Length: 157
Image 1 (cartoon, rainbow, N blue to C red):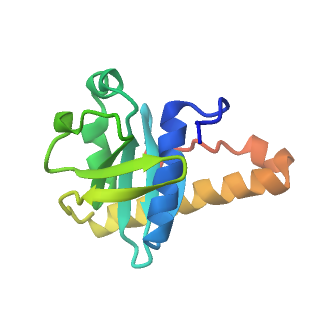
Image 2 (cartoon, rainbow, N blue to C red; image 1 turned 90 degrees about the horizontal axis):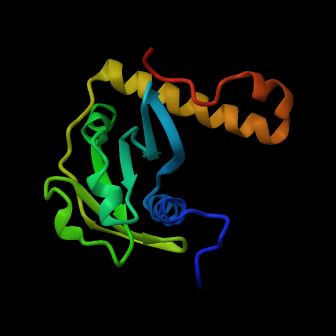
């Protein structure tokens, strides 16, 4: 099946990544903003409170133009790249995780190194994740008040 024209290549990869992570027991939020000028493609929260960040890349140029990805490491226990089958995976740092995905699902090919978050940071990230998810859900059920709240609120000012 071809990618729907309503989704960008990155969104297509993110959708399959979220399906994959859901199969591993994670809840996912896409396009989450932990701090100003830093937007995570996928953040996932596990059953035991573990936090994973996934950056979706659709091309070589998309990867080489990204200078912010190391900033995501401060908000995750594990970091992954998610790419499609055509992506040149030899470009990706070996200490990071790797997910092969398309809009239908994905597979974890390599686990990123685990770097446990400090307790205070974990609490702040978890609360930011929950508040963002709740605002988005509220926006589906009642777009009035939710539209006033900034769904891209940052965890840290």
